[in-house]
Length: 226
Image (cartoon, rainbow, N blue to C red; front, side, top):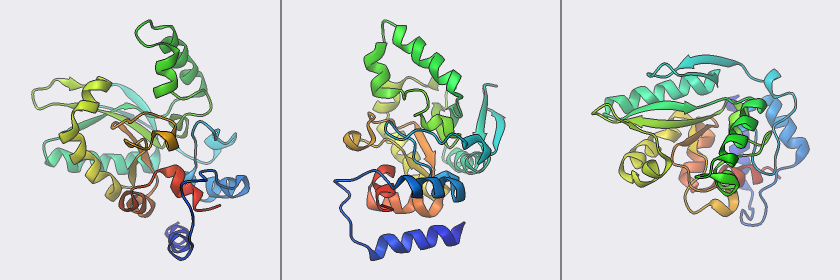
């Protein structure tokens, strides 16, 4: 795996490309990447989850400190646990709020949020993917919340967006554990989603560091393979 990633990154350094104009990798190459390197699969509003996805990964069960149950892709979970342990040493407790979702679960959430008078379809378009187009179908994406030192939960979206100091510390640790901030601020026109400081995506350490150091999105990274 590391050899494949290293060759890919070498390609990035020796080729020139315009990231601003194209975000869509070759369909054939997308299929190859999904097979050889599942953690590099691109799923967004324009790219649906591969039909055979669950044959390519292994999901493992886990619970957060509140006893809530989740499924997470095995390597994603291993690296998330390492990230969580490191942050605990700095007095920051993060917990899984959402991980793998089946197609049926995504549809249920969409229907529920759309019918909620305080949320509605407009909120869904801003923060929630259509069925089949959610990163949560991959098992490689994790939404987190924070448990504060006094034991209270920081779980509300607006509250987490406002907590820039804590999330800046969390985000600085992501790349070393193979994660990226999937929907960064100021990149909404590329990702298609509003800023979500809580949504992390596992892509492997080398790719995560490259994305972090070059301040690009996963879409822009994938565009380099066209």
